[in-house]
Figure 1: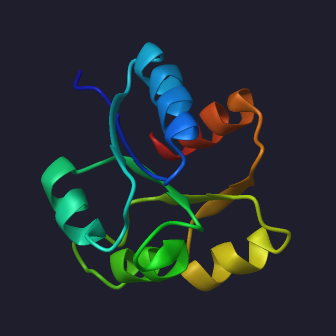
Figure 2 (figure 1 turned 120 degrees about the horizontal axis):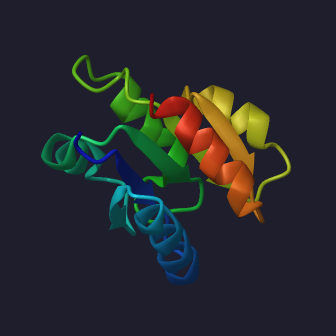
Length: 120
């Protein structure tokens, strides 16, 4: 069976490192990006099973990047879990058309459960 792939968009190097280690240890193939303006190219190249998207990310931000993805016929079915430290995360996730969300700071077990739920 091939590894499940997770693509993480976040500009926080510490979060990227910690989350990458957690998911790699759990058997996922992980790719990270600190920018989101090239989301379509990155998704086309990596073909992830699930995407973690930060809101505050350089260039175009999480909402716009997620909308770009969801407007793309080939990739709109890839689940996007919105991950951000924002009081209005549910509204942001809805505006972005994300499939789910989790607030920062997050519990790693909660994050793993959400990713697993969408990686079926």
